[in-house]
Length: 178
Image (cartoon, rainbow, N blue to C red):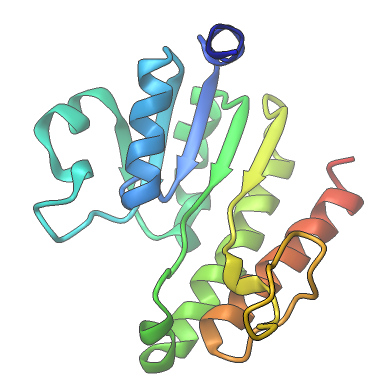
């Protein structure tokens, strides 16, 4: 199975938003090791212990460092890369932060996703778009197992923003990317 995955990924040009975060940095390196061509788009992580601040990571994974809301400023560079796959991970990922900086959470998670999807509409090279949300998109069912058929919900700002992101992504899929 790994060999078939390797054959599919090898040589693919993949843009990963949020590639300096925990999941994004490990995903970027994994895809790089599978010989994909990876371009990252993300904020710089201030904590020096993050994998994405490692010198070897920086040598292997080229990253455009900017807020996801500014993705259109980098249109020329991204178009030149000709991404075939876009993996959107960029988000404000902390529930606690969503209470203290609610507007930023909504802008990043909702408007950031819209900007990425609008940007994708302009890229003829893109064949696949993956948008990662969170298990927080689902209504809390008091300990019941959640799955992709569970009802969307979320009462805190973070969860509401991620639920919105899921709905928006599905709308774009049905309206523009079928």
